[in-house]
Length: 344
Image (cartoon, rainbow, N blue to C red; front, side):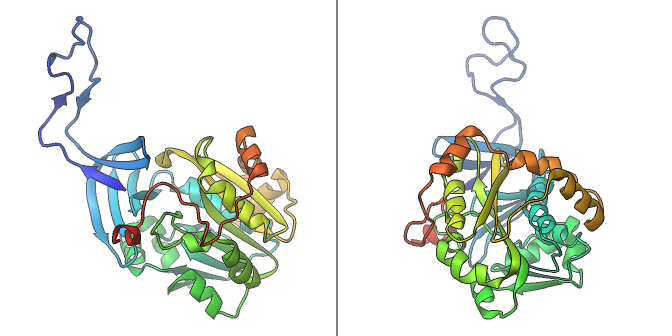
């Protein structure tokens, strides 16, 4: 869970016996051990590891029916959306996450006209999709209206996406919405909150969901892509490897890839899947970027994808040996707890 701390005094020094800025041997410590007067956000990444940064202001804190919500204005990362104590997106580097989530799938599809987003309430995923000239219709289905409304009001970078006539916003559970609809899509994107115990989304990472709900809603040659949690050298075993293995049970071709997200303090993972092989080279992806996307990407291009889909030896070994399949009865979670868990 993320915590916000505000010091009671101005500047305090952790060494109570030495307040002159020296280390006791006449050497300056240049501020080491000094706490500056500031408001801080702190997130517990795992039991013995926390990540914190200074805040300019707290724009919103509250709870919806489904999740705890915070919108913070941070000093190093700009505006940051925090859900259930987990940083979801930060203004200064969200382009890495959203370009990585959206463009590989849309560029590998020959003509992506219809897109369904599971989650994505902040609007950044829709923004990147709508840069593709071929796209005719985008369904963005998020369960939490309060998150959507707040992001639409405060995250001005996505304002145009929310008012694009190609976007249809639905407030509903993504599973229920896909079950209800009869149409099929060229690309389905899972921009869901992380699978945490008591959170609203973990059931949307299961084999039964992919097999019975997602895959039947894809056109022939359709592509599914999902965010898949931390993918660092130590953190990839939490959920990344089993999401990858679960999708391998459902689709013929599955590509895991990752990128470092500074505000997450870790490498992050995505998994792309289809029954049609992914055959495009870096040069071919670059050509499609020029032909099909409005404006210039800040992060993603063909060589970047070649690099991000070339995982380290340790991660490749784990993925190769992974046997766990994600089900409701055998779910894995990243560290932390959702609002529903804390109510019990």
